[in-house]
Image (cartoon, rainbow, N blue to C red; front, side, top):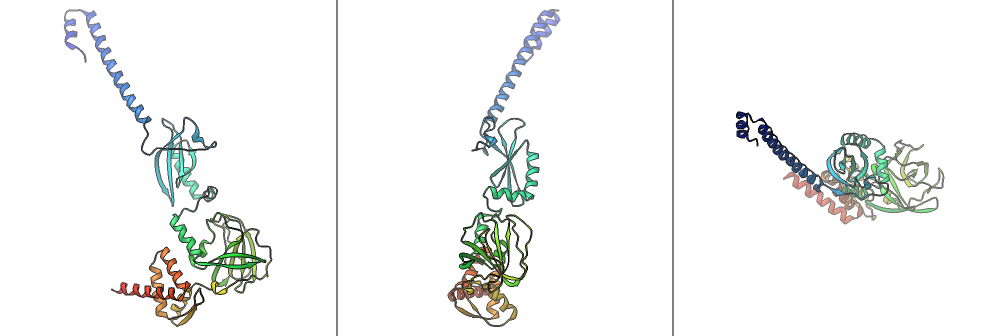
Length: 358
């Protein structure tokens, strides 16, 4: 702080040399004080930047991974947002000005960009493009849905046990898909399938059912068949091709095998095995009974036959409609497997009706 009294006294006495000395001394003290303050503040900033922020994580890379640069060896959380069903996370690489950023999709690193604005723009465009599904396939990732949803889809596809089929003289273990959900999904998102495996799509009616390869990573031989097992058309489809392919003639069943497995021709006969397992699910039969309001005997998976009236059918369908996906699959299993399981499903259905009326 300036010593104003000494300066005034020196000026009054005309001692300008003293005024100059006092002024320089005071300015020097102020300057030093200011410089020390700057140094102290700079030291605090340096320490803050060097400290590990709470969202920091180490990056383990490969030789092709640019984050192995010794000057860019740590990433720090910057922001995250959802684009559709994808969680996008942007992290800064290293510290300091003009640092690049890396982009993660559902915690899997995608690309690096010079800044966050550019990164966010390109991330949104990429997710909306067809290249995104291809990228997920190369990374060995499942679809955007949660793991629980994936389990539900698989259970829905396979809720009837696999049957043995003979195609072109070769035996296959084939899973049955005969619900709306399982027919829509087919082999979507599966990364591989054993050579002796396949899936059979069972439709209610014989029509020219179209097939596409959206979200399907496996090249397939697709075989359309009549209810008696006569092959009416065969196509080899490539992964991710979203063109809908139709058979030349109506078909009740569509068999999907690994590409190259089928060696036969149109007109060949497929041994369908136990046809009772290929019938529409009991749920489809209950829909028919409910619509027609008449009694009907239906055959269950183990061969048991049960008599169902319209009231029972409506009770089961009402309960089925109210359940979530996982419990719908459980109810369908109970209905299909045996007489005792079917009886339990009916009891649950009536109990549900009584509770809703209270």
